[in-house]
Amino acid sequence: MDTDSLRLFVMAAERLNISGAGRELGLAPAVASARLARLEQALGAELLHRTTRKVSLSLEGAEFLPYAREILAQERAARAALGHGSAGVTGTLRFAAPSSFAQLHVMPLLPAFQARHPDLTLDLRLSDARHDLIEGSFDLALRSAPLSDSSLKGRKLAEDARVLCAAPAYLAEHGMPDHPGALTGHDFIAWADQAPRELIGRQGETALLDPRALGCRMIVDDGAAQREATIAGAGLSINSLWSVAHEIAAGRLVRVLPGWRLNDRSVLWLVYPRSNVLTPKTRVFMDFLLEHLRGNPAWTDA
Image 1 (cartoon, rainbow, N blue to C red):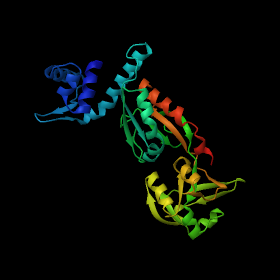
Image 2 (cartoon, rainbow, N blue to C red; image 1 turned 90 degrees about the vertical axis):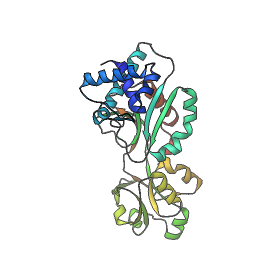
Image 3 (cartoon, one colour; image 1 turned 60 degrees about the vertical axis):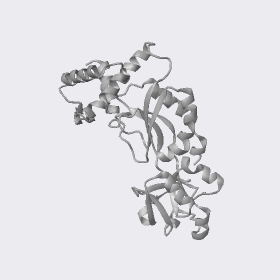
């Protein structure tokens, strides 16, 4: 199994075009097809289904693809360690992040990153639903949770403080709660799981915020939508401070129960599969995000 054949397979799988992948590698269509056939014979599995009209990835090919990418990444990293290869960072970086965070804090930075690394393509998958890094062949992802998954490695970006807030107009109509017990009867915009949250007071006292015990008439699974509904006056909501700090500073939202903090212990992590070699493209993007976003004081002053 040689890396040239693996590179041809990866390119053909991404393009679903064997001839096109071969041309990019300087191979005639017949040579590319023969090389893939030899790879399949060596592996004892058909990686690509071929018909006269189209090429598609087989089940075995889909399972093998992330391993092929990893082998190629290790080869690049090994060559880079020996000083071989181009001086610039090239290739495609697959990055997954929550859409609400990316819109506010990642996307505005990308022009500067692309100016610094013009030969690197970013493949961004932005969703508040969590992606599987290994199955999705991601190089890097942003996660907001304790780093408990033993298959992942990561570096801390920032604390992810959560705050309870509401719009001034909502509070003018419904009143400002002055202790956790006063939350009863308020409208609440809940996150999809509706899990109870522990509140801790300044003296260490605790209380439970249970969305199911409040007037929970709206459930969302997108952080930006939750923030906008709160600004519009739909009720109280729990938001990451990085999502609402600007709105609080501008007076569009007001902290509720500022003397209490949510005991979420959430942290923003940049994570990558433990099995992956930390390739130059992954390292430069991780370092760039850490340079610009690490420890932002506007997010941690909870």
